[in-house]
Image (cartoon, rainbow, N blue to C red; front, top):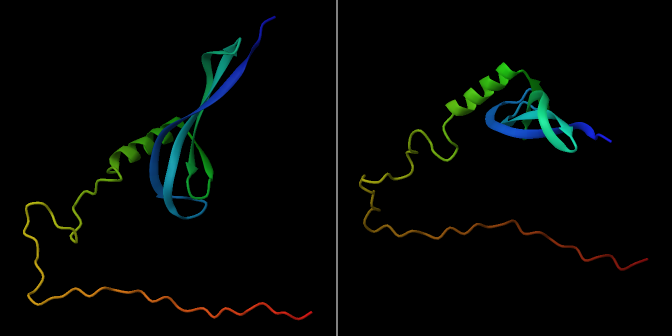
Length: 128
């Protein structure tokens, strides 16, 4: 008896940020590749087909892509700077090697206390 079939596996290729066509949010889209392989006795031997698609991380919408479009998305992801490294330093944060601004003489920092609105709680009714 020969046991044959196919198995599908999904690989994450890249993540790119652009405007979603469904929810109109600028969100991350995961580029994925689904490969279907022929199996003989549950051992994957060779690929039969592969498809590329993106998944919006905000709404979950999937878009099927061609191989050329998937390569364009990968190139777009590689052109973006890494998420943790801004290209130019933020002006509000002091940089190493630059003099720090000192507070003016006589300045005393005041503690800031945030006031929350008070809620009136009504006791439950006791009548039947």
